[in-house]
Length: 347
Image (cartoon, rainbow, N blue to C red; front, side):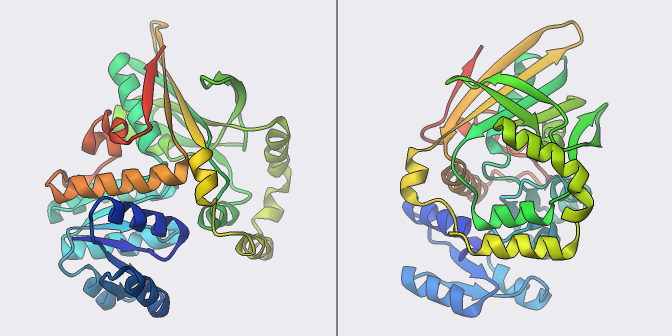
């Protein structure tokens, strides 16, 4: 049995729709009794409600489940309690985070999860399935790689949940990996021009989840992640270095979140259907060998629903290695290519 926690949110509903389209009948769950009941009744599905800080109620939500798809962010605030419940109840854990701190916190619980026979697999969506699978593929092409660069562009605008996570981290630093260790760097620390297959675009470093996960997947010690952005966005990020103390103030973050809550929940179906995401990766070894590969996928939100459900389906068939896992470690570098609309090219 699959439980979708956070099923009433924007991405949670996309995951639910993908489950139903795949012939799966999940249990839907969340914090609000009224919202979860209404969604369950509308689809004729079993529903369960519990706040994440109510351990007994959360145990009841997970009763009889094989796997939970945790869609209620920001995950820095929600993942630990759901992971606690999964470990207590022997339920495999998937989420759709892209937050480095969440990946590292769950990686630190590897032995605990193994002892419980539970898989902890954060990042089962656009963050970080395509980039993680590409990283594993590049490692296969360049086995002695010492440096990895990943980049992505395209897709759609942000959902309220993603934007809220970004607002709550406003004023924070960037991050890269050096010598196997995650180190902080200024926002938009480095820029480079990257050929994404449609055109060459400006891209800048961001603290994307692969700074954590790609190391666990490949062992490559030096990792940078970029996203395509306009010159004005790069300038704004660099300006944020000066404004960081202001952006970290609670009242500023509250105002940002309030403004986000006035926006639409996320991109509509037509926008998602028109969008394409492009992912680029480069691995280098100490001898100077360089390999480059690219991926093309549906937009990030559509892809998140598809990969999260694909991962949950794999778990239902017994493909769930206990302990902390990344997508490519759990399901292989070809996992992303199981999604319709995804293609890879080696350069």
